[in-house]
Length: 176
Ligand code: FES
Image (cartoon, rainbow, N blue to C red; front, side, top):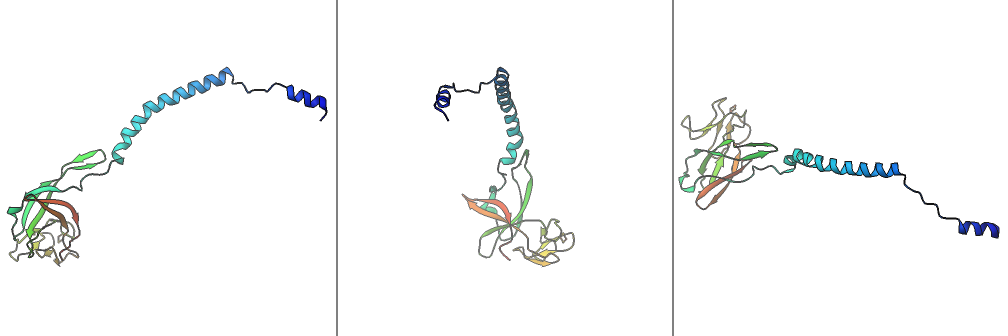
């Protein structure tokens, strides 16, 4: 490169890329529109999705009966739980058969027969067993399956607090 060319290059003005008026308007309007759309649409998306993100309730313990009412003989107790599943809230009624075991501890059995899901009852045939009216399944007082069904009755988790029995989630039988 000659001295003359070097001199010209050094003094050539730097060329800036100017934004055209059209580009400026496009960016400004596009940005404003996106901002406004976000402000309008995001709350709707959040409203639609929010219940799905909230943890399902229903695992809490529910006060069912005074501890003093529980005997060695199983008794049927009904109670309601509050369930929230997405947008749907409900208060289904549940049933538990509650009694004291030989260790004097309170336990509660689910009434759902493990054969095909009918409802069992205590001692309808006078054998001190749970009986299922559908296909004659039988269970011991601890819920152990004695005939027809292949598994024992489920249990509720139990807490005894301040003189009351609280029932929680249903779990597999721990007594048989
Ligand atoms: S459902 Fe209980 S015996 Fe079949």
